[in-house]
Length: 241
Image (cartoon, one colour):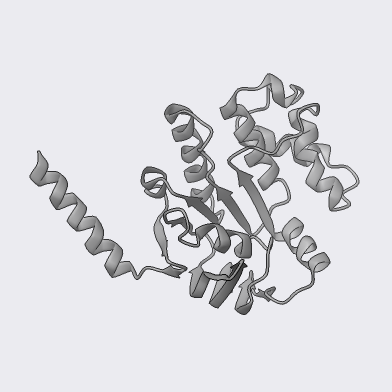
């Protein structure tokens, strides 16, 4: 049986601002199996952004264990973490993070070049075709719509065939119709077996996750408590009709 893609145990992370100590992560456990699509949700200050940073190997916890695709990464040095990020994680950000003077194809080729792939073009072309941009490969990113730019970002995340796609507010800069198209694309990729974690504050976006991991005050809210809260909200909405 394969190891979970994400197996995080008792993660803790504390920040100091002046004399104040903020526990951003307070004993967090997260398990995401291969092929899952999960949503990490929570209000501002709940700890979800810090959790994303740790799960994405952009930061290290103060304590706890984190196994990514079976490899313990919580205590790795910065250079090794960078290698793990490049090899195992594909990122999709709210702000796209594309280089404006490069074509869609060149933007998707970049992570492969960093990984030392000698001929990245065929792989980049395949990734762009997969997200429906076969006819926009040579357009510079500033010649593309917001939805097309996010599709380029998804292609860039997929091109290295990572174990995990980590999407941070992927529809935040898109209108509702375009955002729904991007979420439908994630659904399609997940149906093909890709493991996807979406970090969002938007409950409508969170519904696309097969499972919700809700953060509050640096911890994960138990699933039964989420269900009770959702039921109470539904009852309140029905009573207001």
